[in-house]
Image 1 (cartoon, rainbow, N blue to C red):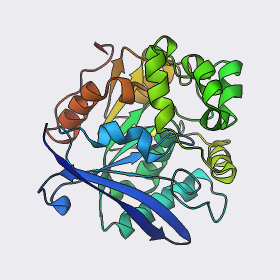
Image 2: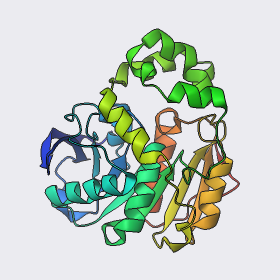
Image 3: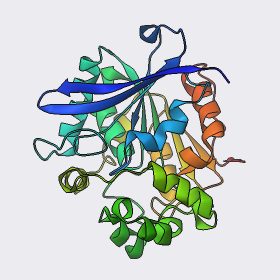
Image 4: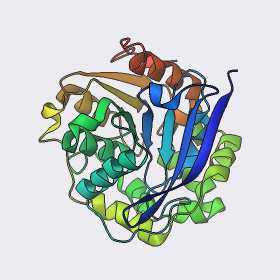
Length: 284
């Protein structure tokens, strides 16, 4: 496997201290290619997506912890989604990255949509994974919503093992070793950081302006996703003019359980401009 050079460190963005992980092939010139910027799910830290950062199929990949999440310092203020989008643009400035591909996961998918709409010149291609158009979405069950309203799954390992299958679906329904492996990568967010992300998402929706997005878009979804049911991905792929849908035979965390296949698909979409496999294909 091709070795990769991974650097980690803090960057100052306004009043925030943001933890950034930057991965690229060993010996590659980092500024030579448009990087892929990962926007993570609610409460999730960079370590959770480390397997994707390590994939040799991908060129430069950048991940970061939002304020109050992972290693980043607690947020200086509460933000709406448009304010988080500005934070992303300011982070790109701090990293001296004029434009990037965006990969938004779950909550981060909402942020990726907002960045692509609010700062279209900063987003080259858009990847939306296990996400939705926000408030006007096909919702999960009330039981799943209740379990997601608290960061307890990050602080209580036994609780996470109890609820992981029902929240994330797919392989986590039956693979206890996988559940334990995911739990080891999770770091509890601060309550203020988690609340800030909930606050940003409250009342937010992209449904009225998805048709105005002009970036080539790959929508990825899990066939068994209790948290973001598959119809939401179909809505995104239908409403965004230049979008394709790829469905994986797993649940909400298919980026972790199908990492190699995801990386191959991303490489084709981002680097070679190839068509993804497309709806209604299920990537097995």
